[in-house]
Length: 501
Image (tube, rainbow, N blue to C red; front, side, top):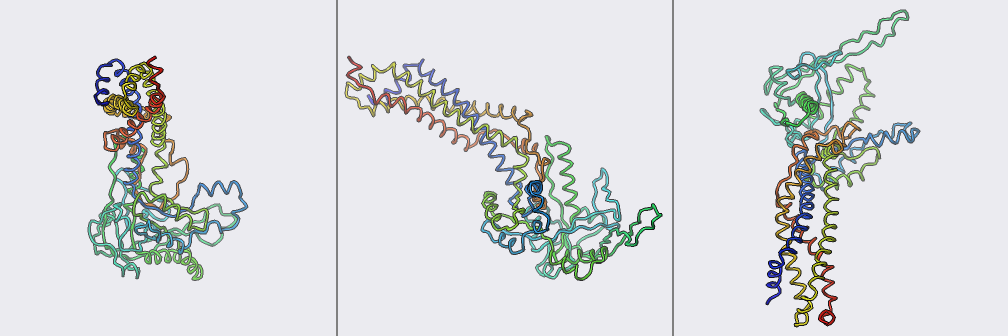
């Protein structure tokens, strides 16, 4: 009789022992399966969430490091060398790294207006006070493929983006949102004058006996532009679990995006220069210095989300100022997904502990059974059966019982993992421990979709997947085979003469 036939008969005839072994593997398999299911689910949530957030990066000051250094060694910051941003050469060198698909260098700006209307939610309006009623963010563009269009932040509804000539010459063509266009009754091709307004205080000293504060003077100048295109903001749908403050933040971010005007970098320079002249009376020398020190917000779009950490490491090495570093769009996940990361870490430790416990317990159970069968094994050896065939028989017996137990625990363990993880995610100690409000996160200029901890929780689902099934079965069978090492060593030490005496 072949050894595998004897193994099959041994399993069916020794029903009690087979059931005990099955039960041990089934219970331990449930623990491993549940932990593997949780670990796979947390990894999938992180992967999918970061994919939705995009693979963008920028260079910004590390304010957390700066604050610690200032408290530790304030004398180091007496000059202004520490605040010097990375040079254009450094920024361009980072853009040439192999991980970068393309990059954009934008000059930011801001204007206030009184006649040119901004968008405000129906529930209420935003009051800026001072010299103007409405505020607009200005975003410079240095390439005809606008980053926010390419990355799906906004969508062009009518008109067209900038031409290479318009960007190079700084033509007065702009992109505005649909809401702003409707508020000002504008369409593609229309000319409009932005009534840029600001308040300036009189330079004349106050009279000594006067208690009245100086009255600011409202200054205004017209900046003519042409509407080249109209865009709409791609809004994220609200989730049922989102808190009111999270939805409020999303609405505020959407409003900021709606009230953003895109124009060529050269046109932003002209606008900023005119504001400095008209509002602050800057001299030609100061204007030249300002232009030479023009601040750029750089956005690097990477080829893959998997390249973020490698890109960060190489890019940081190219930045001379130690207080500047690379911030990525995916950093937001790391900031707010503390509970999800903690759950993944716990599941990893559970897998390791459960696997070690399984190896130990199954080894002892099988060894105990073999000691009771040593006369049977001695007879096989006395009849000329090789130790290899006996070892093969024990392994087949173990695998037959294990495969059935592992397949069943694959199903129940998945349900167990879902129930346990959902319960843990509702507890206070596993709540969001990485709240972004606890500290400043650099890279504020990145225009990427925001996510909340509730969004991440709602995306978390323990389901059957090919990765889960393969990972668990490989881990389960590997654990069972490792647990057979100690019993097999016992077989190798068997002496049939002593057994049969």
